[in-house]
Image (tube, rainbow, N blue to C red; front, side, top):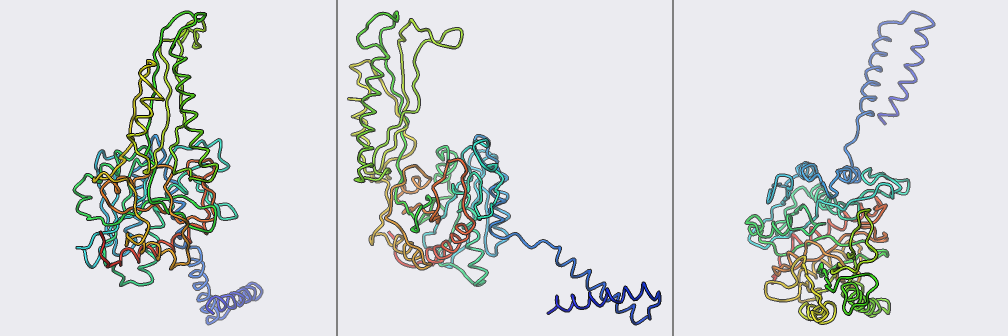
Length: 467
């Protein structure tokens, strides 16, 4: 009504102005009328030129434009942005922790519960992302460009800056709808550094701190992966990474001579044996008997041998005395690590062939009681039932629970016996983490906020008994 009236009076003002030009004479009451209309028009113009507060999608794009990619992630800028965002939401409290250096802050956001004696709920998102190759992208990886179909292109769009913002936007919506909302259990959100490089200066340090112990965490929710169909994926375990270097030694000598058990010969035999093991594991996946995350993967990542020449090439008439190969091996929690170590010693790198090996275990394999690092997804775990019902309550559907093929910070919780699930509400979306042209559609992002609203209310208001 107001804007319609302004338009009508604007037309009148134009008429009066024209009359003024033609007659050069306007009575005083008419001039007052014109001035009043002019003031109204100025006020309307000011109101229409004011920028509205950024919406959730815009805030997501702003966060994506902060460069937190390795090798030089700007953690302080990311924490400052998230801290300001959290402070704009009523009832949220924030703390910034420095567990290593000032360049690796950890942000802790808290929504206090009415019964702080109950174990709390902790949601996690890592601050860092992997590098990108801009020349391989259709849009700059830090631009967060939104195309006409709503696709937002940026490194970290799926892994996992989406959930970082969705957590806060979900709480914002909950409180906007119910300003008096107070959860029963205290809800925490942590934003941690260095997950992409093992979490050793991030979550690993955090769980050892007094700050973490004071949280009394009873349930942990971490990142998951996109789903290509209309069901949400959920993960109850991770595969554990091993970095294995196999070395071979042998008789050096002229390139024309035939030696028994030369370094290169021994290494090639080892490579062949590991390749057969990998092929057998992969056959189980291709036959549909096991998922990719349920087998041991052993992927070669480098080979090193030869004697360098002065021109940067290799001496072709000399056989080297040493050769080595590196493997990225991933173990599901269902595999006995001791049996795999025995296979490596007996078959992959036997000492009888002048071979040796070194294993770097990138994280724990068993919990504090020696059990596999898995979270139950059945009636025995009340947290699972609350989570499942919360997703269903907002119209979502979960696919069969999976083991994540890679590794997340959740392993640091499971090793302490804390029930932990991996979940990112992205359905009908290609899986693009660590890939070129990583993107997430705005509609998927917004739908995920609604899912987290249901999960946050259900998990933080759960009053049942937990293990």
